[in-house]
Length: 353
Image 1 (cartoon, rainbow, N blue to C red):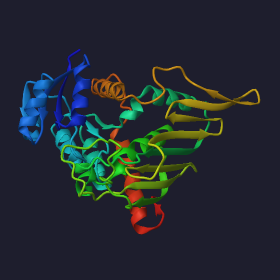
Image 2: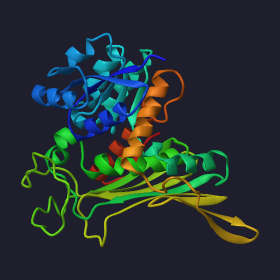
Image 3: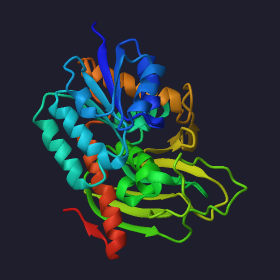
Image 4: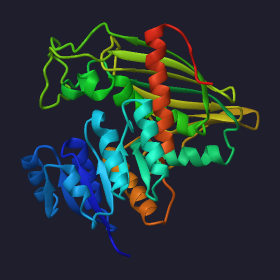
């Protein structure tokens, strides 16, 4: 089979993870890298053996030999480049969130529906073995009807600064950066139900906390502790039309005793923790039992997760599979994110019906 010819828009850290996964995929060939910093695009292209590098992604998208594109830019240009790639006839894998706003997300969906291309969202944690194994249990009915879920991603002191801390660029803080991952996991495992009401809060209390020097953290290249316009933390309760409820919290800065991640779902026949490690709870012979599936890893692993995501994208583009994370899922998650922010701003529950 002919290899899928790949172009990547963006040359930052997440783009290089995509490129590493494409390089390791026998069905893909990296053709080009585009970045507004042409020198960086050239350097990254050379590192991954791509023959072409562009300072203007439009020039790359004009190449008819490129079949598919990963959009790995800042959040404020996800919609711009996803739409441009779709209109150029390319299959698109766009990093999460699919867009900063619901209006942008809906525009991507509208244009995608008018073109015969794959548009997939970078919900990489869906592709981990622990998630896919648990999803198979749920889809088989082993947990019964899922009526409650919890999703949490807490960093005690983890504001990366730079564009992550700039609301105009990122669209939001921990909710759009790390909260989106656990929110999406819980919603996906629940069967992607339609939300009917959202109640959310955000806090702007602790800020960047640059004075904390005893706890190392990831900081972007343009880190500036004086610049921060995003929330410290966010929390929400989401109700769905099937009567199910989802509870969410996430933070960059919080007086917590440890960093943590937790995702759990609960049904009328059983429940499960997905993170920090997969374990299923149910009843057998009038006893409560825990079941631990024997898989490669009970938690999300970065490299293998992206490799599986890229494999699913390549397989979908070549007609061998269905996307695990289609564009409409990205739109619905942005609908939830926007409703959380709106609820926090207006101090009331937001109806989505």
